[in-house]
Image (cartoon, rainbow, N blue to C red; front, side, top):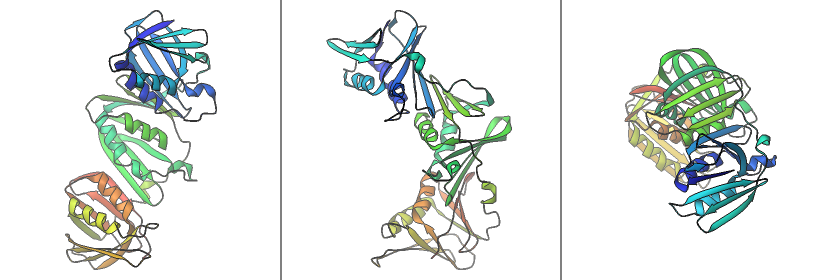
Length: 366
């Protein structure tokens, strides 16, 4: 069996698929990608048993349909090393794959295609289509708040929730919470799942800021996204996500509004002298003024005073400056609103002109 493909058509799909593979899998066949030929199209599939990515790309020529596996990293390195306009011929003979291009020849070992696992045998419970840019916005607005290797395994991912005509993403690590809600053009049944951290990061890498469609299918154990010639499937986390609605402060009595750029730069400068371990900063509010103070064990002090819109009582509260900067970097807006209650209560941060994303940060003891 043999096929011929241009380097241009092979390199990007192969790079995308290799991105989901584990560098040291327990099962030898997971070092490989699955190649399937059908109707002069090449399908490339890779999996680490948690996520699976499959892409399709056109061939210049194929002798017959079939499927086989090939060592992923070696095949990718060979493709990268060849000239830009190279034509690549791959021939399969028993347990060997022979890769040729011009005067270059590589003889690789293979493993049976029948041994390659897949995550695709499942039924979807929710199925709808939205723009890639919309899905990308939902993920980028919340992904930084996901936990990483937390013992509470259900926090190591992102909640996807459908409710009426709304699609919502939620992420929290127990110290901060991010929620983003976007309306869809159709009503859906109420459903929620938790996509693992790796699945979220891989999906964010694949999505483009375009109006191209993304078909999202949510099953009992898996979530699948179809993007043009890419099919992405991820297992779901079997756990109960915290009730984020209970965390959102709805009765905040102190409201601060400030310019996004001014506020962000003040926190960036104050962070320079914050404690490297705890990253705490002190916020002191008085009428139309915010004072930000950071100190460290060397008794160095950074102080920033900025004009804000605030007419409440004077108060002091402490926060992790890294958490605040993560939120401000995600917002990228003109005006920011902070809703506060007291020094021991959480703070809600949002865009003054767009309520689709809400962020909650727990306070630090001063």
